[in-house]
Image (cartoon, rainbow, N blue to C red):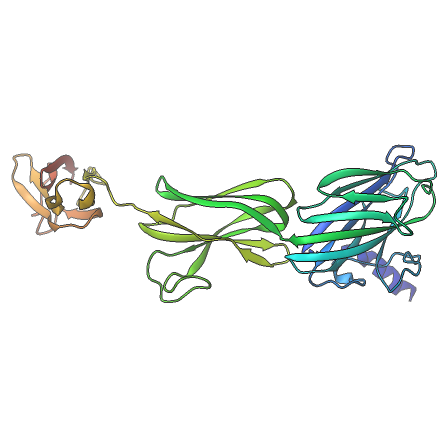
Length: 386
């Protein structure tokens, strides 16, 4: 039995507890000599898997001796025994599911150093959460209302003696992450997404999801028919913070079309919520005719020629969609016709093979290729080396 007890003693520190839905830290320390001689942290909040009793899977545990001291039904009571080694933590969650509105109560037992005169409490409460700290009997000796991020002080005649407190926490429609804005912009051949949060609670991060602009054989979750949602990236969150935070993501794997984007905000426990959807139109249609330099150059025996055709609606002459691309020798003789047809707006690439029938098995030398469309004409030089 002794061996078993010792084995369990060494294993307990290795236990990993689950992440709660909402965690709030409540730090108490005294001003005994030396300053801040000891401190104890109470981590409290909400968890949908918790009960109002002790939940070991969340790291809650009874602290001997019986801290509750007969305070009604069995309930976990946080114990502050000062002075103690710093960074001692007691965990006390209550049942809840975000978003949540309601009141939860925590009971605290503390005993400070006999030389202390002040107990200091530091607590950072997220928006929608307020707390009232009172002495257990009447609330007349200690009555501290807590909101936001503040430091509070207790001056009472019982410092240095065991004492009991009641912490009543009010939750008003608390949500994991308060998304302030979510916008997108098509810029520099990519979509730039930007979003900000006002506050965050247990925020693991954001999945960036997008619909395809092309017809899809399935209907994705929450998407339109033929526009299934896909995850294209992940941006880590800041955990729990009451400070505004900014995020960005760049989507470069796009073509011309209309995309929809949304954020899937994920908590540490795996729960999630979707943001609003935004729609962004992307247009890679060329705005003018362009003839690019062939590649490779010099070449043997094959090279590629790239050109662009603009949208007729943005061009004065609609007949410019009739496109020809021809190759000439240095004497001006036509040696190959690569394109001779109407073309839709877009980017095109054709291959020129000097050994093909079209290329007539050309000899080494300088050649020219010309793109013509209505009044537009552009000529570039290429070199064939054998």
